Length: 64
Image 1: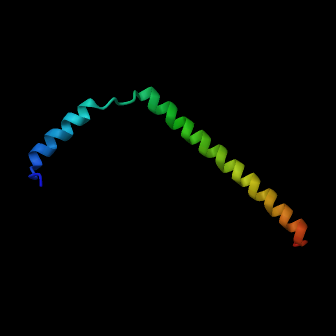
Image 2: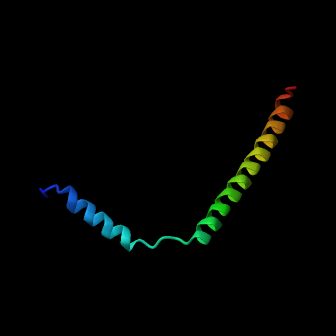
């Protein structure tokens, strides 16, 4: 079993973080905008779908 050395662990983590390719601010803003837009689009889609299913169910079962 490997010896647990917190200092060595921290050094290795710092080395790994230094190798990470971080996205630019512009890339982050663009992808965030896309996520928000697609989430809103999905919400509208499911709202419309739910309303249509509700309408069909009311017609089929003559409720309301």
